[in-house]
Length: 431
Image 1 (cartoon, helix red, strand yellow):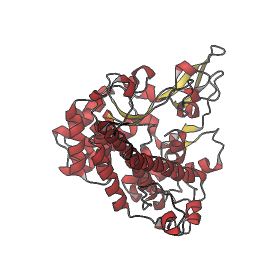
Image 2 (cartoon, rainbow, N blue to C red):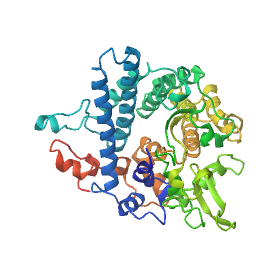
Image 3 (tube, rainbow, N blue to C red):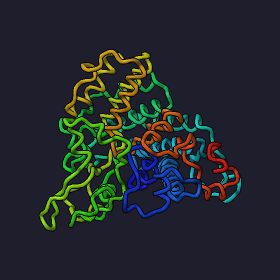
């Protein structure tokens, strides 16, 4: 959950492109939609996700065997369900990226072909496993049960929120509405009054954060490299990479109203050089993870990356209600307008009070696009609306090579070579 997901996924959208200092040919191929099964970013997404799943599998199996004299039953249950939450998260990413994928639920300790070679499972079976893991994880402690030293752990609220998102993606609208409503009604979460606090180091793991990738720079831990990848390269003393660039033809920047408070947090167009004190002006660049505490080394940014936060739960609820009721009701409007009011823009109920189901759906997707910039959301949103929508959107943004196969990624050729039971996604055969 660092730069690989941005490089490997978001480059294939209308919001992002490989910046002038993105040197990897595989990255530039994804940006231009010329990638194929030999792409090393796809290979790493697959490998690192299954590495994480394997770690969860080991934890689930081994923690259950620890003697009761060394671990309490409540801690055992919690650690196992935390591992199930993480396993579900990684399978959720994999099934959305690659479609039919192998399901592996235990550590492999055998070299026998029947154990090593696992075939693709249908998407429906993968989703069933994800849902089961998250239902188990719903019994995790609530956020209020944790002390400050446990901030960042998966909670019951995180499990419910991710489950709502899984249901939404799988078009189980009623379940998505119910589960997101449970999160809302729990009162554990609320929006920060100031959008900037979503990304400030001093307020991380705060009231809006449900589950985040944790970063601590300059302390022997891991910094958030997205800050460096998006920071300007031509401002003396900033030393940014400028490898993740805004795809200006996609219209993201211009879609923000000037009074939208998210605009100045999401993007930056001016910086004062810490070296010479001069003001530099440039085209819009992403700014959510820029950490002023490490001006000259943004790879050590301590800003967390939200995996799911309360604003998204509100938007999930609004979208699901619209689909369930074949049009928005007052609760759907209230949910999206809570997000819009925090941004300082007009309530949708005031300016468009009688939207159709299709119009409201588009409004929610536009709100998701602006609220969740640079949070690994755009490709997933485009893909889940279907191949025709994805292709039309990308071509309208000038990415003319967009094709229906691009709503999934090709299963890496290396994996196909290693596993004779593994089959390529049908859309990617012969590409």
